[in-house]
Length: 257
Image 1: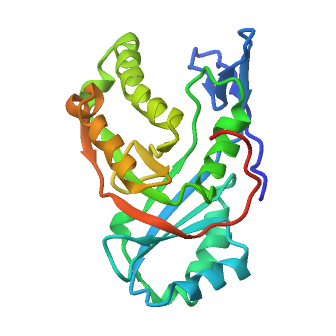
Image 2 (image 1 turned 60 degrees about the vertical axis):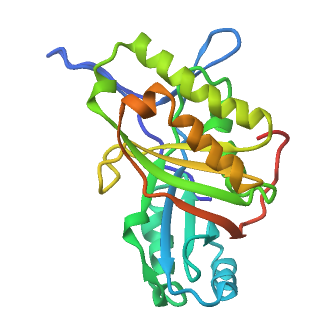
């Protein structure tokens, strides 16, 4: 997979007192040391209609060595979804774009309303940033034991941004607790992507839910409806793509998800 061009971790403040710009993802070791990384995984989801032979798409993906996962759409008998991923944003224009503009994918009907693009991010307390930002999300979408998926974008309302940091943390802990409970039970796991400034509909995040069965993923969404974040501080949610893996690349699966 192409390596991203290193970014400057921090721009020093100017003499005019401008705020410093820090582009690094942050984590924290068990001893309290602040960790930084400039690695992150970009993911793009696209949906298509008019597919009468999924096997042809799979052959093309394998031959081209595309970093991605192909899903069959449960709500469209000729629908498919393609997730591609890379640490380099250039990959989606230099490799994925070239591939998608040739047969067999160019023969399909694009569904641009489902297009989602985002990047992994840290929350500031993760002890292993490579695992959080790159290895785990890639491993989850490529895990043959997690074939079912729900992908959707969301946008928070301005009311959330006006809350204090402490109030935001309480709301996020409530939301995150549901995901941890389902993950601990082996019923479903999430992939969280930030898409600020990268989404045509001005969404804030893209969420992928993956699991061994569809029903628990539906229950995660249902449980989330009752949280403060969803019931009080969301401006927009969806559209939802629901599918099952038709093809995924083989990668080494580490212990745990």
